[in-house]
Image 1 (tube, one colour):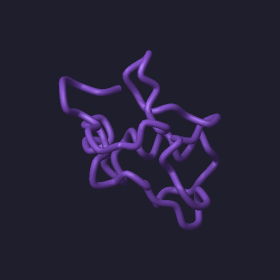
Image 2 (cartoon, rainbow, N blue to C red; image 1 turned 90 degrees about the vertical axis):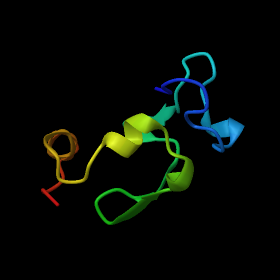
Image 3 (cartoon, helix red, strand yellow; image 1 turned 45 degrees about the vertical axis):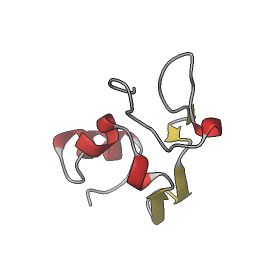
Length: 75
């Protein structure tokens, strides 16, 4: 979800769901995620990622919850 004007500026239009003011997902995977989850994955819009992504910290309880849900080991 984009928070306020300018959040997500610089993200390509094809990676934005303008009606919902967020980036779309393909299943449980963000449309901007490139690579293979659990192996080598990265955010293709990292420099311009929205606030909600900037606040999501690797190893946080939220991160660990998502990893468990996807059947991945803790990082």
